Length: 97
Ligand code: SF4
Image (cartoon, rainbow, N blue to C red; front, top):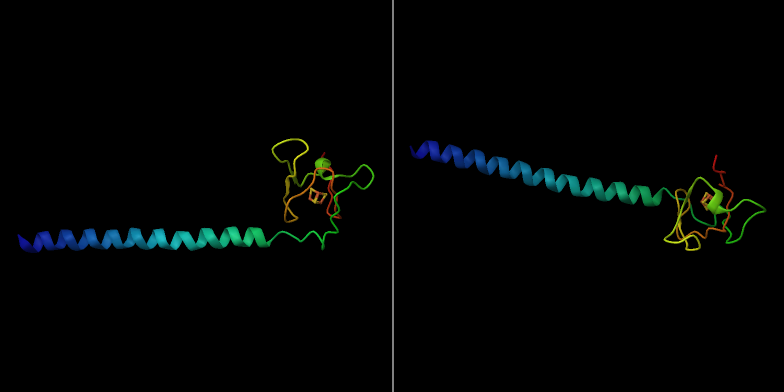
């Protein structure tokens, strides 16, 4: 009887260990993915970003722009790091269809 109880405990401990290890393994992967995504963006300088339009080309009319909370608030860009002004521009400009 004691052997059966020991086997159940042993299996339970093993399963807990596996669950714990899977949880620990998932955290670094998620963290690394976020870091890789953040690092994948180009700097404003390398993209020659300016906070004014280039003719009719501006961030708000670019497919890469992610709007801020209001129409005039700074947003984000899918390819350039940092806060992006709706009226800004860079050499990666790609017009919305
Ligand atoms: S790619 Fe350039 S132009 Fe387009 S939203 Fe980003 S910073 Fe603005």
